[in-house]
Image (cartoon, rainbow, N blue to C red; front, side, top):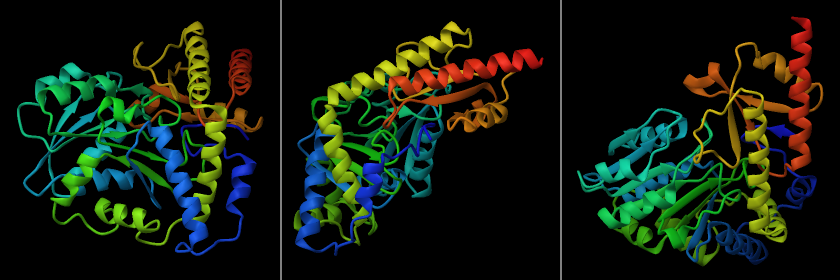
Length: 361
């Protein structure tokens, strides 16, 4: 059943089968070989020569890791928010007792480098936290430009990026842009079952973590790095999920990263053009629209429960709006294993639903 929702997404049968291999000890040499092959291949997704930390958690676990590892008790965080997940990262900072300032825009307005430039020199910030692809609204924030401003005006500030719904579907160049941490989850563009978090961490970020006390235990990046070098993970590794990660990364690299990015961009363009042609329009402004999930303005007549009931009869599903914009929007994801033919089928089916509603009216 194709799911056009922004995670969890459909998982290919080959990946599901990879999980069914017999579980092996996570301290065995055989498992460590698989773990390290997956970690090395994951670096290619992040466009980094730095390490990739793999943990049994959602991406939100690495939100907590960032604020606990890089920010001392007397430190300060700058949160960039224009949607639900930027706000979540800010809340993670506050609930960990950290001082955090916020640059917040309306949910259909990107957080731009100019806004960051206005704020970044007002305080000494240990880290800046930004969501690259805000899943709740379908807005893609300009991380490359933001990173450039931070390097120019506050070069000691670490740049931490949530790419939960974009890594693997958009070219995020960690090393070239000078980003210190990029985190993601398994269940979105990587098209894996939920349960794994991955984060690429720079050398200077890891060195900063070594100076910060009270990093906790489970998400202590220094501990994770020591175990990554030694064998795999400090606690029991998610062995069968790592089997799936290993196989899926090989599949992604076989497709070719540039081919994959082009596939996502093509599907996004198709949905964007469809929504515009229908006169419904798009929530995100031009130039900042997501390549992995499109937020469409919802016409007043459209009942999402009825639409999804209609779609489910045809083995499809889309996502409603999120949070305060739920009544105004709905979301169509184009990520994971979806192809252009899938998008064509979905959009034709929504068109057919519209005609049935019009006839019934």
